[in-house]
Image 1 (tube, helix red, strand yellow):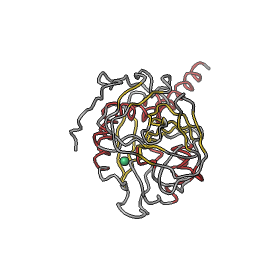
Image 2: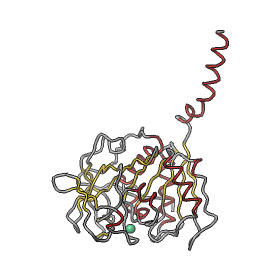
Image 3: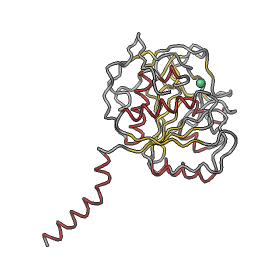
Length: 295
Ligand SMILES: [Zn+2]
């Protein structure tokens, strides 16, 4: 009897072994790209791949969509990955229907997804995608896409259903990021305000904004609203991290950007963040950059 119990226990341990091993072996991450209105996307894919790998938490594959028009051969095996990062942008062609369905099933079933900058411009007419990112811009997004969502000067979340286009930005500048939830694993330990390197500050994003939390904001000098900069969304059993930051190479060299990207990816993959805040993290009045050498 005892032997049988031990054998069953041993068998159960065997079943658990992959997830136990996963704590020490790198997780698999996938970056998808190929169509982005930002011509620097091949470089930012390299930057994001490097940022993920330097955590020691991830091995990274990149799958690139055909450069123009629909790509019937774009069939990433999303289920093989702990997290998928989109470096698509404005005007990206719709993925094949079976690929969209596979991605929906992947995220709803517990997969992690990270949307960076113009990834929130993509796929305006894909309902599940808009649910995942919470807020988006351009691509004829308007009041039918969902409310504008931002914080007012008192820190209250405003959901504004007024008609108008979704997505806008002013001239690039170096702007402060205000942490709104310092208890979340992605923002834990950050100074309450940190200065981001020059970037586009997206404003007037709108979308379904369901099961969405805004972790940090920046005050737009266009709208005078506190626009969402770090967004998390629960989508089914999956977790989504979305940041509208990351326009230019220099924006992605910001240690603040690198840190939120690394932490956001880990959180999307596991629901936890094990990474400490780096010593060179920006402060309220001083930016911090790590020049990218891997171009
Ligand atoms: Zn941009």
